[in-house]
Image (cartoon, rainbow, N blue to C red; front, side, top):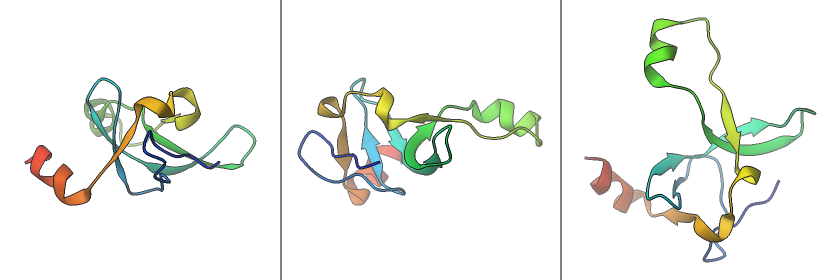
Length: 83
């Protein structure tokens, strides 16, 4: 799938995006239910994954979100927000 943010910037795996609610999310390479390449964000609870080492991380596909409300965040800018 091909996704662009509200400014027309192509979204790629490894980028940080800001969601409509202001949260920052890392973009992952994923697959849809048919095995096709897709992009997604983490849908799994970090603490749950730590307590259940055999559990698999799950993702929300970017197709579930309104891309006109999503913005790619500059890596340098996101590092300052996270720290």
